[in-house]
Length: 258
Image (cartoon, rainbow, N blue to C red):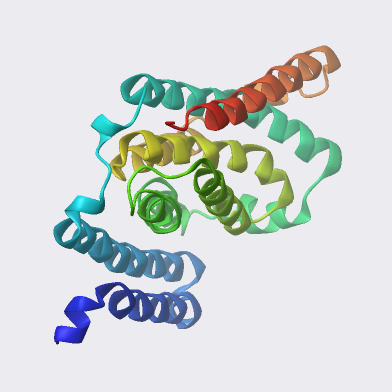
């Protein structure tokens, strides 16, 4: 028992990963892909949530507070605004790329699921609530914030390295290549919310905001489709999105506290 208390990270993380794999494997075979994925994500939420709780109980002196970080409130507001813009402009660019180049994996794994009424509500529950919590605990807390702030304000090298690892990992689990047009800028902004607040609730809220926009603003995507063949509109949208992505990259590179 003493060993478990002193080594709670590995004592919790290993069983959590085992449960995640079991639920993701056998759970999908028994209950279907959506339910199995929900169960696997719940295992992550419980396990990594326990690590987060114990970190704050056992090691409070190693945690950087928001007061120690520059431009906290301003950058948080900017991050949320940029998340909305990434969705609004990025979805148009995504639809154009999808129509122009195609993506068989997207068509099979995503489009068909949302056309199946038997699983659509479970899919919405997974997409809008469960997945954002689980993914932010993994990528923005476990792989980013926990390592970023463990020994005080990080060096610039560690700042960029952890940003890179968490962003690439987040992009890797989000399936297809064309999704990376939106996923990677989103990951950078969620990382900024973590860095500027050291509160996991903020990236979870940003992630939920983005996913809920994807689910509930389907009518806007229908309007977008009317302009996909208009090259002037496409050119303007792509230009705006490139500027937006460059702005986000600059935002990340320049917001490290010295």
